[in-house]
Image (cartoon, rainbow, N blue to C red):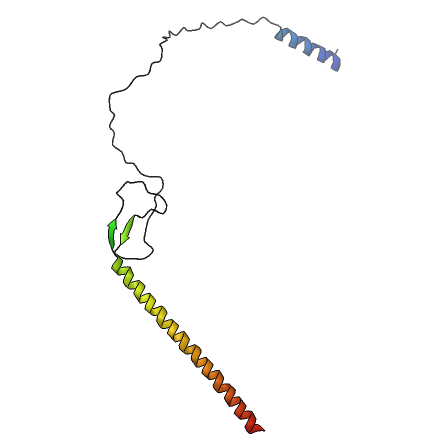
Amino acid sequence: MKKMTKKTITFFMIVLILLVGCQKQEKVIVAEKEIPVEISEVKASTYDKKIIVPGVVASDEEIIYSFKMEGKISEILVESGERVGKGDVLAKLYEKDYKKLLEISKLQVKSAKAGYDNAKNTLVKSKANYNKAKKDFEKIEE
């Protein structure tokens, strides 16, 4: 009897599992707690009390505005906190400052144009002198 076959061992194992698994289990009953509930109808009402709390309100986006050219501000056209849109004029510069710059720029353009015209005339004269000198050289060479 020393040698038991695999079939015999397997049979005893299955019987043992069935006996252990088929035992009656005790059911545990948990008592449910009752919670009292009140039901009320929802009505619209106003709340007269004000709540005042300290705080800082800031925009999530900060935009830095500037002029295309520098100068002194003569007039501010919007108030602090006022809503502005793209293209709105916020402030004006003193006209004297940029009118002087405009006049200076116009004079510089006029001067540059005169220099260009002078250089163009010199070029035309130089070409004429070159052509005359070339013809003279060809005559002398013949």
